[in-house]
Image (tube, rainbow, N blue to C red; front, top):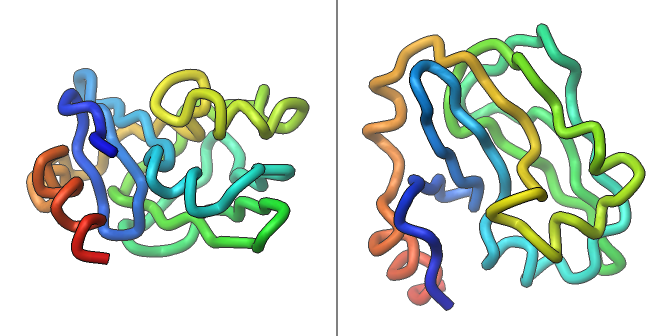
Length: 127
């Protein structure tokens, strides 16, 4: 299993794509595969502040409920509300339509501390 190299990844299995000062965040293909069929996603609201490393929501699958961890700090500027009606999108397109939130970065250098796709693939392979 390889992950797209146009983004960076956290050890909590979130991915980040940065365009300007906006970071789009979702969970990795590996994470959705481990969760199984996603049945519910609880996300914060636009305008909420996130702190890197703290929880910002939950994702529920037929197997378990897992917390989502902010890979970067900043203000949420957009939430993928479509996941409320179609949480299965996270399974079908974890790196595309299954994105979760867009964050205006408080400190763009935080992204430098995340893993490249190659490093993340090695991280998940080590279990």
